[in-house]
Length: 227
Image 1 (cartoon, rainbow, N blue to C red):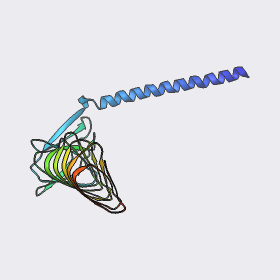
Image 2: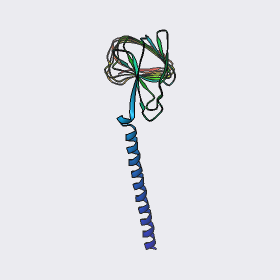
Image 3: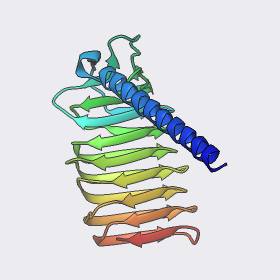
């Protein structure tokens, strides 16, 4: 009886070892395939030059990184062995309208801008990276906006509505004029303002930076913290 138990236990131990070995081999094989798939030799970058514009309108599910540059263009990447998917956009007067940023590699594009712009976004995601501007108007609905990597805005007029969210990671803001409705503002790292003017309503949550001059209005449903 004891011998049978030992044999039975040994059998399942051996089976477990074999199964784990097969899983490790399969993982290593898939990792190698994935690494080859994402190697530089299999990825190509495309650039599309753009005419000058003053406003950017982003439609549903667009994912864009906006970078200040010396001229206007869109850059994005795709797999060489796949069908290339170009971003969809058009112009209306002085407004660049982005309709889709999907590709077969990433669902986002880099938008390089040479002039001052304003931003209007609906159900989209935006990152401002190495972005410098004296005055920026951004109006967002159900959208995400992140300020990061050596960005600088002197006067920032920001409207967040319908579950929008702003996150500060890096950069400078001198004066912030903030309007929030059912949205969130996160001061992720230490940011100090010269002036803060904020109106915060309808179940909003605001973790705000300190300011030399501060004027905040909120309703009872909203929460405000200076950090």
